[in-house]
Length: 531
Image 1 (tube, rainbow, N blue to C red):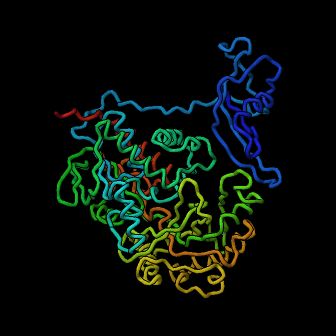
Image 2 (tube, rainbow, N blue to C red):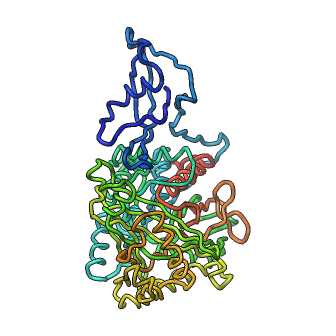
């Protein structure tokens, strides 16, 4: 199979025109050949010339003889034509080492967000029958709890936008973009499609599922894990671990019960601050990690479309437009947009009493008419004001409490317009941020407005505070992804995903979960089934 790049269609042109475009670009016309089998592997939008916007494709295909369609034709690779041999994107399963011992107990996974979910799926497929412990509720009960919180302000600290089946990503946009380069990315996308996600996530440049579809997808993955002998227990918060001779022996639940295990993946998420605290008390090695803080900023989606495309997306037959902006302040601080949600809405994402946190989410159709994004300033460990490993957690909590108070003490986040913020007339929002972040945003906005017309319009809405962009700690890990305590490897303890400081979104977290599962498969055989 071959791969060809830079095949272009106009918006609205059907995909079935791709074969003839391939024939022309590859110089195959008139040579008695036909495109036999083809599939899109990447789609992007070239809107540099707004008068001539094109959809740009990379396509995998095979060629056969027109006279004998059963005969495959060979082509000469030509870089000038963008023609190459299609790479093998199939997931390579790992094998158990020949001398690996058998587990006495099934592996335990703490947390059922993307990292825990994909670790569980890979282990279940390999016959390990994992036990997954999730502090929050299943996605249906969790959705009801979140909607109740948004309506009444009554927060369930165990099941909310951060905790529960699917993790924090379930109440977001289901964005599947990532900056990492890992062959497992394709595996994650294929499994999401298999579980009910849209097929176009396999090739879209900026794929997304949407909160509505993602809820169905996570249930489907859970049911497959169960069908393969795994178990998922909800409302099961892990509150301690028992170790012996630098090995993990068991995990303890909130009710005091112990679950024996020799391998435990801790995929706890970036908001599991109580878990960070007791793991720190147990001597688990971790370090301060920088993150970012800022606000959610909202604009009319049509304004974003016009700035990017020259016209509303619906008129052009294009997806709602997005953006990614950044600016380096004179003092070196970085200001950037993150987790941009076209056609979405801003939501309250609190998980602790007395703290207000904002985030963005959208459904698959992205039709709210409003675009929102985090507008963040980098926070350095030197800003924490303490050498304590959990000083970043306390930094986040401080400004979430301030935002709660400034919003009236009822989880209604403080809001203002950019014009008010710029002119110093929005103290509730400004005071919900560190002084350096407020100053950096004020400096950056006019520059961002020059990059994206209208971004700095006076009526852009700003909501505080966005503080959970990433984990404020990073766990120590060796080459086998095992954590440590007191500088010594803790055998069988696998800190994983965003909470461990090794991921920054659904895709990278899922990939990290797969890697942790692979390590277990390499090093142990499954426990024998006990009847």
